[in-house]
Image 1 (spheres, rainbow, N blue to C red):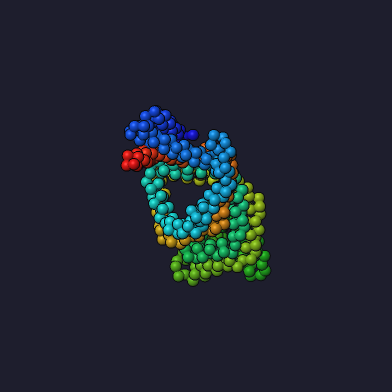
Image 2 (cartoon, rainbow, N blue to C red):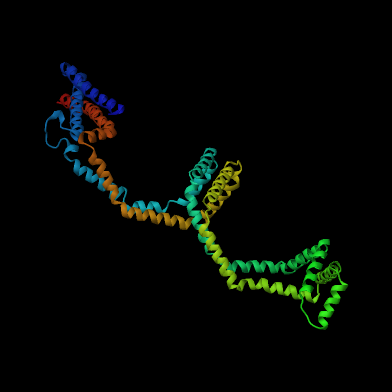
Length: 419
């Protein structure tokens, strides 16, 4: 029992004691005017105090333990009172309609925006959010993500169409004039090779070897023999070298017909990559074989671990909050602000549906909590909460009775004097 309730009980008890002692003390002098007035006042105060004590006590228990009818009202009518309380809460104070009507006028989005803005300006909230992000990232186990990333990576690569891949390559090559660049590169390499000293010797040896292998008859054989006798390997090598250098030099000039023919040939070959079925099938087969044997688990795990560490380093940066979170917060709040009516209506609808489906639980919850309390605990709870006011009823009864007693005794005295 609370200290205030105990104190009020003492005051009520003292009021009865005072009225009782006053009644006894004034009994011998009730013949005098003032003695009679006080005696009548104390008598009425004692009766009023006892009557109010009986009434207050009868609410909670039988006065003096006597089973007087219509006493101990709370214990005897507990079920009816709890049912009435549940009914009032459910149907009047917390009715579905009243809650739903109240919810309609709550600006949820504005309250949420204000709360977020307020928290974002708080240093402790900022640090807490940063720590939460770091902990969330730290909880990520990259080893468990690796199989998923591997599966997605292999699935994506297996779906890549090599035709599209080659088409992109050929388009890129043609857009960058790779046909001409390839030819120029080959001609430059050929020019460098032909100008080497040993190249002439090799060309001479090869040419002489070819002439020696030619089998001819008549005048053609005679001509070949004449050439062999006139030319050595060195002379023949120089002739072939100069001839080839001349060809290479002519092909390096823009607009030269043979050069244009070679460029056109290279261009057609590049374009034909897209339609080369054999090449596409071979590359697809090679790609699938490679993906089947590919074991990138450790590489993926290391990469994910590095990404995780890089993100943690970014979060640790002192500019992270202003650089990343503030712009993100502003974008989110702008979205909320632009759609606040729709968001509020959605929230209100969800709450209304929830209330509609669960409103009966309010009464059940109150009923269950009341049923858990034994009678003694319930009485003690009521007395602790309203007992102070009830005890003052007893005090007021004694005081009012005292005043009324004096008044009535005075009136009686006046009538006696008049008679």
